[in-house]
Amino acid sequence: MSAISNEQVLKRLNEFFEADILSNEEPFGLLTLEITPSKSYEIIEWLKNDTVLQCDFLTNIAAIHYPKDTNREMVVVYQLHSWRNNFRLRLKAFLPISNPSIATIVPIYNGANWMERESYDFFGVNFTGHPDLRRILNEDSMDYFPMRKEFHLEDETREDKDDRFFGRF
Amino acid sequence: MEAKEKYKENQLTDLSKDTIDGEIATINFGPTHPSTHGIFQNVLQVDGEKIVSAEQTVGYIHRAFEKLAERRPYNQITPITDRLNYCSSPINNIGWEMTVEKLIGAEIPKRVQYMRVIIMELARIADHLICDSVVGVDAGALTSFFYPFTEREKIYELYEEICGARLTTNIGRIGGFERDFNETFHTKLKSFLKTFPPAFEEFNSMLERNRIFMDRTKGAGPISAERALNYSFTGPNLRAAGVDYDVRVAQPYSSYEDFDFIIPVGVNGDTYDRFMVRQEEIRQSMRIIQQAYSNLPEGSYKADLPEFFLPPKAEVYNQMEALIYHFKIVMGETHIPAGEVYHAVEGGNGELGYYLISDGGRNPYRLQFRRPCFIYYQAYPEMIKGMTISDAVLTLSSMNVIAGELDA
Image (cartoon, rainbow over all chains, first blue to last red; front, side, top):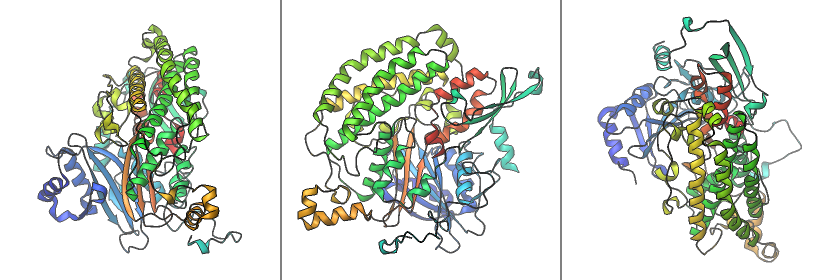
């Protein structure tokens, strides 16, 4: 369906950022690349301006927490979309939980402003250089990042519910 | 910081000091202002009637859906999606069901796909009708608010025939529907197809060429295509700015490629263009429904996915297999394979995306909603800068910012 195949996208990217594309996969046909976190800004800016790929629409930014992966607990996922070539691209940057910092992409896409604030609010990802990195949906006085996996949905001190037998935490 | 400077450069230039002739006053527009149609707060800096700057506060009805979803079985997440854009819940429901189907690789019968198209387009009509009639209210035309509500009521009656609910529908199941369209539905849909177009044109004629309405809405809250793209706009608001992106055409799902329809676009991206784009989309939705209904294929109303459909009671009492599935569904123990999937549908407000990561368990490891409202509402201060407060009200309602989708 796409005018440009995933192989061509990967080939083109490898010409410029071979050292920074650490791995690639294609779950359900969507090219997913792991990139060096320190190069995220550069890669996204290049993708926007590249005349061949024209990957110039930011679909969304999501953060994911994998507490078991040492030193790469936090993932920032950028989903980009090229409308002219009709392909989607997913970039993942793995960050350590001790210092989950990554460059902001607000100067490239204004729309990233709230998306980054949301990831900060719920996961504590620190987007360096963000013009206004505050909590967005939660209360300002909150002192933890509620979407991290150590915060369970239900109160753990409850004794009236025992879900052990159903493999639930 | 270099990035900060770049960001400022990218913003439209602030109104310079010398254009401000009076004193600056601060006005709280919301959170419970009647014309915000939901709980939004905007702190406006105004110079007389002119807005100098605005700052939104969001999160008043944040309900932690993404966290809730991490503990719920897949079929229990459908009711959560109802509460995103509650003006078009069926689109949210069906979009979520299609996400799970994509992950488990289910094959969906053609009849189900067409049934879904009919329901999703009815939902789009209901969504756009509310938005457009509310634009009329905010411009001072109350009559045009009541007329289309008769028609919206008919759409809600159609939902009732399918799922029993009206607003928060929880329509369908993963893999199809819980039952086929019934006789009453067919009768009501046929009558709707006949009576809706003239009723809609009557509503349209009240506003489309209305001099007062045009004076109020033309040039109110405009945004250029370039700025809209930079803000990741999608849906009617982007199309009003002149970009013809529609998920239904760009990446068709649920057999949208079978239907013949056009994507209306505007020119100026102002309130009037947003209104006109939505009006034309309603006509196109009617075309799609007519095509889907007249070509409705024969076949089953659900896919062969026993893990997601409660078996008939008689079988539960007599057959081992049915009893097992019944137990698994009721206890929420339907596991799906590990994987990572993004699925987008064209919601009432734009690209509604579901980013689902499963680790193979009974509930998602992470589920993120790409909520179009949340993303485009960022541009609001830029759009109303230099406008009057009454323009700000019109801009807000014509952008169709739905509190449920904004705050998730």
